Length: 142
Image (cartoon, rainbow, N blue to C red; front, top):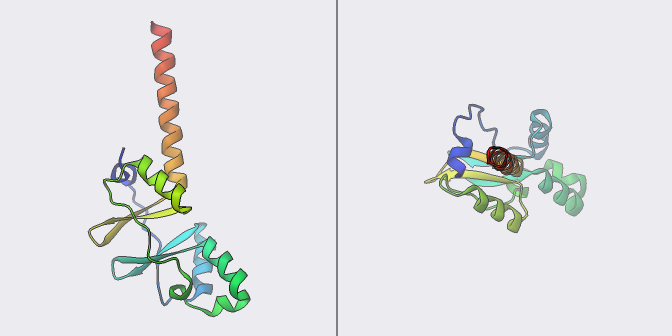
């Protein structure tokens, strides 16, 4: 299974921001939309990711003054991305190795989707449950 297959048919628009968005505004967006990260865009190109972790790290390092900065000052950059043809298990391994929870999906220089660790774990659980059911069915009919 590839990332492209995992994200096909998604109709929800990707919520993003630009590097000049204020941190306060970006935090409000994360909270209102109940999401953990925002791709930071320059035109249709991902230049970074702003996440809950960035907020925590910046608060620890700079205190409340970080709220007056722009997303471009505090985002994780460059963004770690995957291509649509990346296998799901490879994306999971990348997220584990890099200790990240969100991956922009990029084709050429354009972002076409965003996957979270939750998306990938759900796929894996569904696959394992499906395999287990196939084994139970096979055993019962043998």
